[in-house]
Length: 105
Image (tube, rainbow, N blue to C red; front, side, top):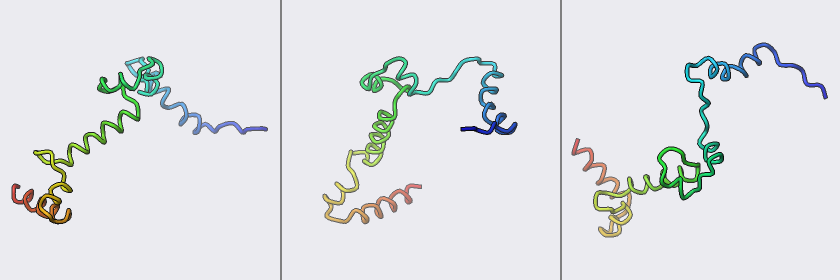
């Protein structure tokens, strides 16, 4: 099978990032996190203790954990729990929460 050669514009576009890296003052390669994890054989347990070199699974775990924390008020209650305790609907809790938040501004 014959594959036609790239045009000049395609060659320039394909090699632009390599040239940028070569021309930069820092001649260091910037590894992706997944590459570093693989090269250094970092386990999921070790990733839990690291700040920036984490895999996709740990990233999603941290984001979900952060979101869970943000959903709770200062006493650790979610809107669902508040609705159950007050015997009102969740939309009503959201409405009251919005009113309180706007009155504090």
